[in-house]
Image 1 (cartoon, rainbow, N blue to C red):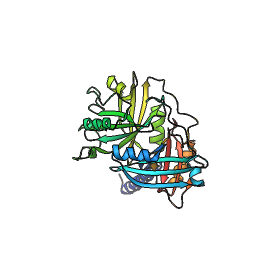
Image 2 (image 1 turned 90 degrees about the vertical axis):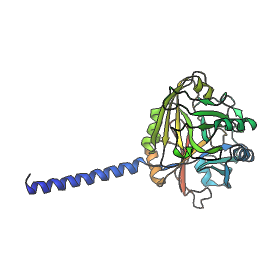
Image 3 (image 1 turned 60 degrees about the vertical axis):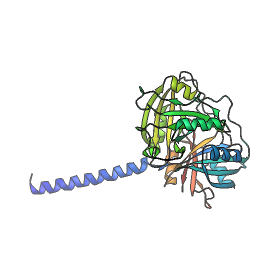
Image 4 (image 1 turned 180 degrees about the vertical axis):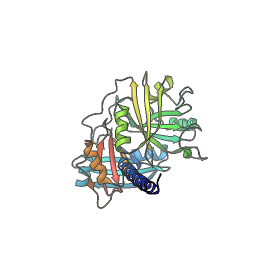
Length: 343
C-alpha cells in the first residue's frame, strides 16, 4: 500500500472507530434509563402493625417515618385527597417502603388470591439458615402460603439446592425466605454472619408474557438478564401452593439494589389478570421503586413507548419530603406499578 493511501486508510479507520464509539455510547446511555432498584413499596392497612411485624419478626430497621399530603403526591400516585404515612425500613443494604393511606382508605387484598394471579408480587428475604428461619416464623405464627420449606431438586441445574418458603405478612402480602447453596446467589449472601435475616435479593412478579416483560425491563429501562430457569415438579407446586405449577423464571438486575424476577406460569394458565381499577391506596398495591439520573429522559422515552402512566406526567418535589427531586409512576405490561425517581 502506498504511503498516501495508507495514511488515508488510517484516517478513515479512525473516523469509523470514533463514529462507532459515539454510536455505542449513545445507545448505552439510551438503554440504561434506570440505574437499579431503590426499594420495594407496599401499601399496608395498619402501619404500626406492619412496623412491628417487619422489625420484630424479620429484623428490619426503621429508617424514616413521614406523613405527607398535597397536590404533588396526588398527581404522582393518582389518588385524590390523600394523606399518607410512609415508613422506610432497611434490612442489610436493601429497603422496603411501607405506605398507609390515612385517607382515602382502599380495598383489602382479595381473600382468594393465588400465587399465579397476575397481581402477585413478593419480596425475597435471604436467610443464613432455612431451618432456623422456619422455626422462628412458626414461633411467630405466620400464615403459611407454602406447605413448608422446599429444596429445589438437583435435576434443575439453574435452581438446584435453593431452599425457599412463602408466607404472608399481616395484610396478606406474600413474603419469601430463601437460602442459596454455595454455588448460587450473590457473594454477599455467603459471607460469615451471626444474623439470620440478611437482606432482600429480589422482588418477584407474575407476568403473562416473559418476552413482553423483557422488552419493557431490559430493552426499554436498561436492566440486564441475570439468570433463567424453568421450574416444575412437586417441590415447585408446594412452594407456590399451585397444583401443576410450571414456571419460566427470568431474573433481571440493574447496577444496584435488588433484582426483579419474572414468574411466567406456563401452567396452570388460569391466573387472573391484574385488576384494571387497582389504585395505590388498595392494600393489594405494590410498587417497585427504580432510580434514574435522568427523570426527564425516562419520562419522555416511556411516553414514546406508550407506557401506561399512573402519574399525570413527571412530578417535581422541591422540598424532597420523600427523598426525591422528581418522580413518576407507570405500569409494566401486566399492570405492576413502577415508580421511577430522580434523587
